[in-house]
Length: 340
Ligand code: SF4
Image 1 (tube, rainbow, N blue to C red):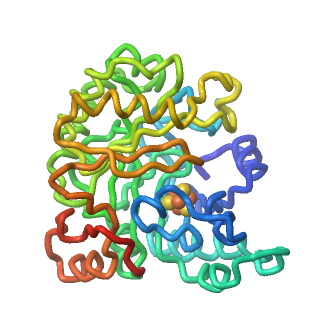
Image 2 (cartoon, rainbow, N blue to C red):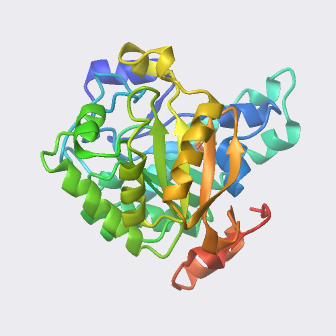
């Protein structure tokens, strides 16, 4: 197991379920929200990810950073390289499904469930590979992604930009996220507390690899008020290097273990996040603001060349993947929300 006993207990208290020796699942709060009929997450609103059919998981519990705004806690494991056994991708998927569905048992008994959503929730259609740690570090990540696609499960993968070679070699995913947490080298060190001494070059190389991807890519900025909400020109330069299809500008949320490091005052209001994004826009002439989600304090910028097409055409994505064709953002993106 990648975690020691204390680390395991810490995560179990937070309702994590472990899968094999290095993976974990946890039901997302938005999945529960949707099952209670209270609406989906911002990725539902922005792209059509059905929150009640989404599996939130990771394939690696360690990470090469200790970001100030992370909710994982200071006891969470960090490492630069993989350690311990490497589990089989099919085993991980089958057991992750099982653990997720076990955790959902009992929702039908909720006083006011959305019965349609409860009925659909056993049919997992999306996986968000993020949760905790650095999932891309899993040595068999490409096989795992291919296996998800064979099961018609879309893949959102989040990376903190410290493994550029893994990004370069990555098979197509439905949407690849790269976190850019600061506009310059000094601030990145302060915020992410990276283990790699060449963390800045790794970020720059990761952005270069991102720019080469034809499939859907997104850069996420997490704005921590009073800490990284400056340096617009620096952010714009990094974004220009990564050439993402989408930019999510999101406010830091005062939750979990980050509360020991930051304060409530560091959590920007939605309007402040929007102002930050609007200040960025003149420096990003190829992008426009097309959507916002107030509960998550996030706004969405999209490449103008996509003409507002932000929703995923899932059937087409899976058809192209199965045929071994190139996945191009414009071919699988639509103006309106699509069926699963
Ligand atoms: S996409 Fe992310 S926020 Fe939305 S339901 Fe899945 S894990 Fe939760």
